[in-house]
Amino acid sequence: MDETLNRRAKRKRPNFTVETKQNLVEQTFEAGASVSLVARRNGVNTNLLFRWRRQYLQGVFGVPCPEHAAAASKPDASTTVLLPVSVVAEPSEVTPMTGDTNSLPDNVCEIEFERARVRISGEVSPALLRLLIRELAR
Image (cartoon, rainbow, N blue to C red):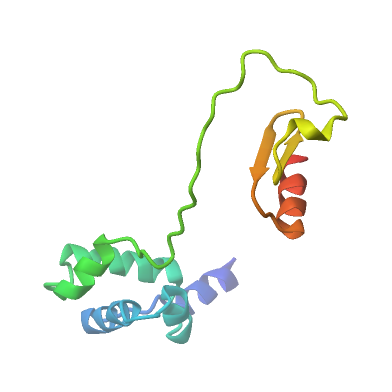
C-alpha cells in the first residue's frame, strides 16, 4: 500500500500556465487543425484540450480572438452534406407485386422488405443498389 502512495506522489499532474493553454487552444483554431492531433503533439489529453477550448471561448484566459469565437459558433459547412429526401404517403391498399415487369415505368426499381419499401428511379449504380439492399436487409 505504501508503494502505491509513493507512485502517486511521484506522478504529479502538470500545471500548465495560462499562456500555454491559450497557445494550444489557438493552435486548434488554425485552418485544417485537429484538436486530437494538437493534443497528441503536446502530450495533453484531448478532453482536457476541449475543456480549455470552452474556457477560452468563455473568456477564462482573456478575451478570445474574434475570429476564433466566430469559427466556433458556426458549423463547418464544408463537412455538412445534405441529401434531398421526399416522403410519400403509403397507398391505402397495397397490391402484391406480380411477375409483370410492365407495371413499373422504365428506369424504376422497387425493392420491398419486411419493414420498408424502396423505389428508385433513374440511373442507379449496382454498387448503390448493393448498399441499399444490404442496409435494409438488416
